Amino acid sequence: MIEFFNTILYPIKLGEAWVMYAWHWLFDLIGLPTGWAWALSIVGLTVVVRVLLIPLFVRQIHSSRKMQLIQPEMQKIQKKYKGKRDPESQKAQQAEIMDLYRRTGTNPFSSCLPILLQSPFFFALFQLLNNLKSIAEGNIKGGGSPVGPITKAVALSIEDSRIFGSRLSDAFLTSPGTSTKILAAVLIAAMSVTTFTTQHQLMRKNMPASALDNPFAKQQKVLLYLMPIFFAISGVNFPVGVLIYWTTTNLWTMGQQFYVIRNMPAPGSLAYQAMEERDRRKGRATKHVTVPGLEAQLAEEAEALKSGQRQQPKSKKRAKGGGAPKAGPTVGTPPETGSKPAQGDKQPGTNGPQPGRKKKPKTKKPSSAQERG
Image (cartoon, rainbow, N blue to C red):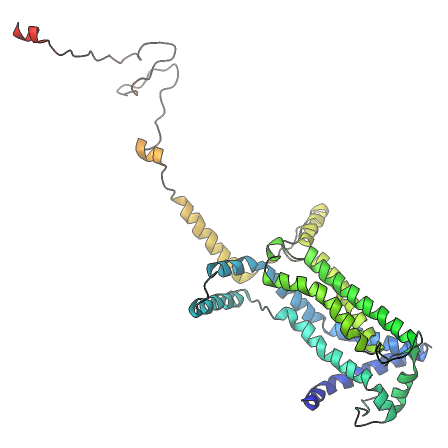
């Protein structure tokens, strides 16, 4: 299994070796010391890798924004099947969620793609730097086979090169020197701080309030505190060269995230409201993000709601009175001929009944004496 893994990583490791060698040649050309030339070549390798991943990062941003937009529809589906644990309901819920992804063109796994693609580069660099000692000693069984331009002589050069008194192949746990432990501790702290800052800014500014209660947001809250702990535990085993790569890529991610939060924020987030306010002050329209499949569904729901409001049920008063009351005669004008004002209506300014209306005399029932007469 390990041999298969090494076989897959070898082309990446070979490419990284050539990129590092090219950067070292450039820095050596301008007269930098060997140690700093190799350290900066790792930084240059990081920049090359992250530039190559920019198209995937842009795709990740668009996918993340779409996922934020479909969260209300996702919550409707989850609410619909809340408490239903039977297999049929679970299957129906999953089918509706997959249909929502299909209609809106979203993929929940696309946001993980850049991280997954960075992993082989990281492991390949770890192997390359970790095997420098074996390459310099010619220990083939210990992974000391030359990798492209990293021959035995070049490996010896990297092994002997130092920055701040620490070799690039030394690690916190394996090096007895104090300088290596201090440098490794500083790099691990920088990795932890940059990761925490990036995640904290993402959750505080670039997530809408409606998305803070979903499982993804809860997972991000857990990672916010777990990742620095993970770096502190695992970082002590990594060579200084790997820590330089990791710190550089974290700094790149943090700067990239700040740019996205300011210029491509998630709809409904605090950063999006701030962008709308900036556009309002500058007198320009904010470009809103839409999801075609979701927009069509929302338009259909709005039309159905609108048509349902056209036929409103009558209230109880209207149903009992036969509709709205008719308007009475205008003040100061006699009623129209043949019109029958409602009983009890009076002409303004008079205490008697309205003109034109005769009071019907009351009929008295004749007494028994009158009947006999």
